[in-house]
Length: 129
Image (tube, rainbow, N blue to C red):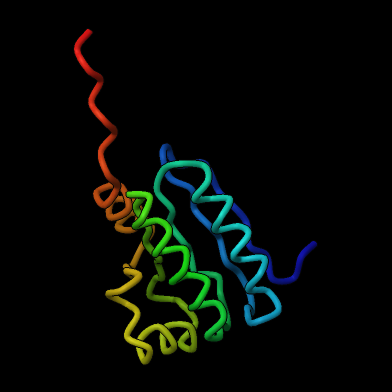
């Protein structure tokens, strides 16, 4: 079993949730980038769940920012979420870097799912036939 897993949860319709648990730094950033790329490739919104993360460094923030940029270019919703019980160090790095509004970071899974769905570009309307 992986000690610091990064997994995809596709139980929500039209949204892939990237679950980030444990400590993550420059050594796990490539895995996060791969999972984010995979999630973006599924088409639909992407929610990054940091509620199980206990540590993140700037390389993880870089991976999140890069995925956010790619999502915007593709017209795909992208949101990061935490909750009231998130590790203080994780919340602190988000706060001190000023990335909360940029990513954006929201509190709670339901709010994250709603936010990602509303930021997605609507599908192209079918042309009358």
